[in-house]
Every structure is written in C-alpha cells, then in structure tokens.
Amino acid sequence: MKSRMQNSSLKQEFLKNWIKGLQLHANFNKNTTILERRKAIKLSADIAIASTRNSTTRWSRALIADASRDESNKTLIEKISGRDVPHKASFGLIRCSKKILKRSRVAREVRAKKAVSPSVVASLIAKKLVKSRTRVLKRLVPGGEDMDEISLIKETIDYIVSLRVQVDVMGRMAKAADRLIRSTSL
Amino acid sequence: MQPTSRELLEMNNLNPLVSLREIHNSQMSTSSHFDPTSSHDDFLDQMFSSVPSSASSFPWPEDHAPPPCHMEEQSTALLASKLRQQQISNGAAKALMLQQQLFLSRGLAVNGLRSPSAADIGFLNIPHADQDDVVDGSCYKSANPDQDASIKSLFNGFTGSIGHSSNQPQHLLHSQGGALQSHKFGGAAAPEMNQPAASGSSGGGTAGQPKQRVRARRGQATDPHSIAERLRRERIAERMKSLQELVPNANKTDKASMLDEIIDYVKFLQLQVKVLSMSRLGGAAAAANPLVADMSSEGGRIGNGTKTASSSNNNDGMTVTEHQVAKLMEEDMGSAMQYLQGKGLCLMPISLATAISTSTCHSRSHHPLASASNNNQLLNGEAACPTSPSVSALTVQSATIAANGGGETSLKDANSVSKP
Image (cartoon, rainbow over all chains, first blue to last red):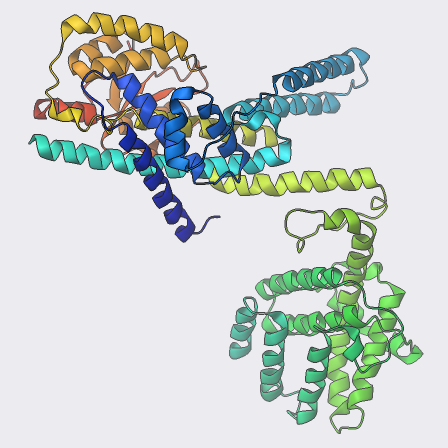
C-alpha cells in the first residue's frame, strides 16, 4: 500500500542511517571474528530501520529500547537516531499473569463439558490455534508482547514493510560490495 | 452512448457532484428525451448549490433539521459504490439513472423534506417491480415512510419549480425515473441512516474507513456489546486483508493459517537480515589482507564460537552450526564443506534449493526464498521436508567465497548434491 515514492525514500533514509552506524565500526581489522562483524552490522541495520519510523510505531521504540539496554550500544544509537532513548521497564509480570488466566479458562471449559457437539469443539480448537499463533507472532515482532490483537496486526504490517526494505537495501549493498571486492582482487 | 459511458467512467475519479453537473449538461444536449433549455441548468444549479451547503439556503419548505453530515457522506459513498457496481455490471443508461438518484438522495439527506401527496404515492409505487435489479429487495422493503414523504416532496419540488416551463412533461418523465430510483435508493439510504444512527456512537469510533460501513442486521443493532464485538472483528478483518497483500502465498481464508503464513514470513525476513549482515560489508577493509587459512587459530576460534553461540540463545537450532560454518568459511571453503558434510548437510546454490523445496514440500513453497535470492547467495539446506514442516535455510553471502579467488568459482554452481 505504500507508494513507490514513499518506498524509495524509506530505502534512502535507511541506507543513510545504516552507513552512519557502519562508519563507527570502520576499524574492523583482521582479528574481529565474523560473528562480531555480523553482530555489529545487524545492530546498525536494525537501529537504522527502527529510526526511520521516528518512534511512531511500537516495534521501533521497543527495538531501540532493547538495544539501548546494553551500555556499549548507546553511542551507536545516539549517532544514528540522534537522540538518547531511556531504558524501558519490562512488563514481565503482566505477561505471566495473563498466561495463567488463559490456561485456567481453557481448562475450566474443557472440564465443564459445556460443548459436546463437534462443531463447537472444532471452533474451540480453531480458537486455540489462533491464540497460540498470535502468541508466537507477538514474540517475533519486537515489543509485541504488550499489544492487543488489533494493534499487533497493524504493527506487523509496518514491521514487515520495514524488514523488506532492510533486506532489499542490505542485499544490494552486499552485491555491490561483492562486485567491488571481486574487481579489486582481479 | 459512447461519450457518456466514457464520462461515466471518468466520474469515478471525480467528485460526484461536479461531474454530475457535467454529465447532466451533456446528457441534456445529447439525449433525445430532453430539450436543452436554460431552465434545466437553473434547476440543476439550485440543486447543486443547496446540496453541499446546509439546508438554510434551500428554497423548498422543510420541517426537519437535516441529519448530520457524516450520514450524508455515508449514503453518498454507499450510493457511489453501488453506482460503480452498476457501471461495471450494466450499461451506461442505468448508471446514469443511478447518478441522478445519487444526487437526488443527497439532496434528500440535506433537506429531509416532508409534504406528502396522495397522487404521488400511487405514481411512485407503480413501476418499481421491473427495476428490482437496481437495488437489493431488502432495501426497498425497509423503506422509511419519512423518506418516502420527502422523496415525494422532492418530486413536488421538481414539478413546482419547473412547473411554469413548457418542458414540464419531460421533466416529469425524467424525474419519474429519477425519483423512482431515488425512492429505491432513498429506501436504501434510510436503513443506512437508521442503523448508523443506532450504532452511530460506536460507528464514529471506527478507526478505519468511515465510508465502507457494513450494515447491521436487523434485530442486532441495539445491543452495544455485539456492536462493539462486530466492530472489533471488522477492524481485525480489514487489517488482515491488508496484511494478506504483503505476505506472499496469502490466499488462505482461514485466520489460523493466515497467521501461520505471516509468522513464517516474518521469520524468513529476519533470517535474511541476519544472514545478509554476515557479509563482507564490514570487512571490506579486511578483504585487502590475504585470507590464509590459519589452522592454529582455528581450534581456538571454534572453542570461542561455542561459547558465544551458547550465550546467544535463539530458538533456531541451526545457530551453532551457522556460526561454525561462517567461521570456517572465512578461513577455508574446503574445511567448511567438510564440516558441513560431517553434520549431514550440504551446501548448494539457492536456486537449486528452491527447486528442491518447491518440488518436495508442496504445501510450503518458499517463494520468498526464490524472490530474495540472487546469484551470489549460497543456500545451506537441510532437506528434511517430509519430517519437519519447514525447510530451514541459511543464506550465506558469497562474498566470502569471492575472496578465495577465481579457483573457487565452481562453488557458484552446485558442487554438492544430496543429503546422505
């Protein structure tokens, strides 16, 4: 649904932010393992794509907050997004209690044997499936645990669009780097 | 009819009011029913000027306050959408009639006139039977007497304001058809306005598009809980629809399978980002240094790798393997290949892996893999399709391979075949 213009400007902004972040790591030498390199690159890319949203979406805020939990990333974040994000408190307790309530409700219904007919059983199973998958999705989308279903879907849409932009730009950059390396080595 | 149909098509993109005027004007000039006179335009000007503004400027007598503007918008939008459907399904003539009554019902919505006349009741009720395909029958059945009365008064107004001109008979004929349609659509508009009135407060809270409100079924409109539930479900449904366009392979109607596809897609994209960041981008400077296999440090590296791999605890069971392969690839492709084969895995180009996965796993064709691949990527695939529901894929940037020189170009092609 984003127009082409919006998409290309998104890509440009992501690229700009990403390069800003990568410049911080220009001191890669032979000793940095590929893992460390990968982590640094991925971190820069994630923060870059999250900051293209300017904290308008929950997943971007959650992403940046998670990254800023580690002290060593603070300079990176400040460089890319241009602002310092405070540490976000975790809502682990609320999540825990919701899960307990959910499980007890399902168990109660099963024990009560209210629904014996197969159609109702099927619908119950379907509901359970949907609920479990929603839970998985909440885990995947950053910051998704505290969202209700409606905003979860909205955030997922935005997140998927941003991921696609990220993959596209990173892929092109990788191709270009590959060509560069090959041309210099020949 | 050619020019009119084209104009009608253009109308879809323009403001209905403005284009209606044009179409009316052109229709006046081309149609054989009507004589183009200035009185037509005056009348039209009257109508058009009154419709967008409030009822105060309207010359006809009115007893009721006009309904709020958003309802007018709704009915207009609904009629506009029905009009488009008509244009698609039927010819241009019916569409023109629809346009007329679109604009008539807008005038209705603004005025809410009420001055019944017995003669008009009979007049209007007669030919409705043969125009049933224009509007749903249910709309007609639930016609509101108020709206009927207002339509009749409109009709009166038609005759009243144009009564003096010699074109009155043609106007009557024209407005008969128009008013008939408007009657039907007024009937359509009435339930629209009634139920939105009932659920207006909750309807106003819709975050999405106010134009495309689904009509509440009769007998269910009054319960606030069910309305809220329905609204919530509608919101979720429309969001899922827009999500369907994003995710490939999204022809599933079932919510659970839709969610499944979404989850798989998000996981896939995240994996792609992870792998793409494993490229030589950061090491472009390091590429200048020769990458000679350093066997002495390899053992140390692997030991280090397992430690870090366990610390970065993902749900993905391939993480450890990934890391090992990445490290080995950095030094020597051969050792990486041997390591993989020791694990029972193989390295293959992404195109081949895609072909295998699509042929074996029909229900889970990973088209995103194919679309995302380019020639420079290798795919490390675990071809366990019958057992596991998904093919776990690892795309590794081939820039590591490129650094090893031209002798390894055969790696670009499939150089290892199958899982033992």
